[in-house]
Image (tube, rainbow, N blue to C red; front, side, top):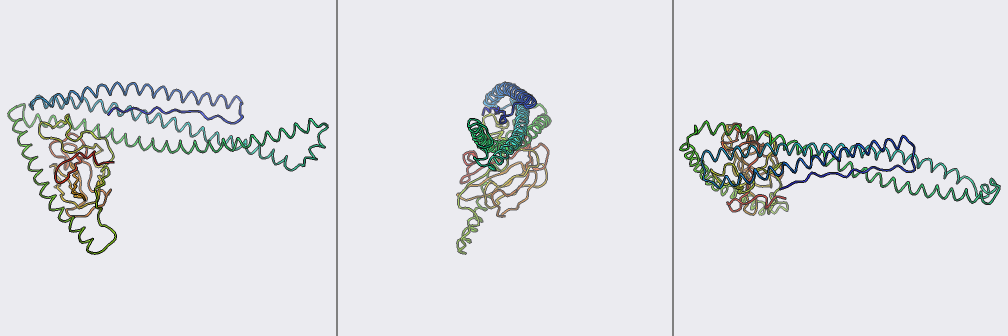
Length: 413
């Protein structure tokens, strides 16, 4: 999906009734700083769009290459294309990080300026209050006697009314300044959180690029540039995948029996609180970018098998959460680099799978709650739980309905 970098509109607050040269010079400098930030953001947007065009081409080339007959050369070309794609995505992520940093700088300038405006306005209001107080201590007769003419008296009364009106305007302006300050602080907090998420994404992409290079070396070492060996490898992988699917189905049925028994026991006990929910309402198991979609036509291992899940990239070791409450059906993990995964069964005949885990914190038949950390992200080639067909840290997140893989994006919020 084509993303746009948000170019923030950074305005400059105006102090009330202040026109001295120091203030004007300060405001001019502030405007220049914000204008420079805006200019850099526009330059970043141009560079981002240019990279997006390259990324779109790489993705189309990958799809086209995957439609060809699976050969060793085509698989190597797919890997090279994907490495170019990942490198461009890294450049694009760096631009997004830089833009977020600029937006944060602009917001901090705005916040400091608004706080200064509040201080100045509060001081100005204090002066007005003192003037009104002094006036209130005198009666109209005293004021009239202190002036030699009726004209002077009228002028004094009009001036007092003007001060009172200005005070009311200052009160409203102060309310608006405080509202703006609150909004800017909330926006700053959101930008800082987005910046951290983008940093995690960058780390995952950089690790993926390293992993892709490592996998390519491993593939060449395994097949020794021999097409016959590569074709045998494809057949072996497909047989392993079929065995994996059969095991998943068998263990899911067993765990669902456990889940049904738990719910029945709860019903029989007459408890008003359900142990587990009665419907499937998943959350994202981890915050990250979806790098491979369900049945993705550009999936780099499509020569071996169809991609029956989504891949969510996150740094190696990041905690994985249970997408919904349920019962752990499978924990496949032996501490080696063999493919490791966890499967949880849920209500409504749904199940979720978390693949390429580098650590596991749950056991079979254990009841888990939505959001509970159940495992850690893996996937970097050669690390525990990664399996042989991965190029970087991510979770292979699958959803099954009645034992059949379905697109997780149809159910995630």
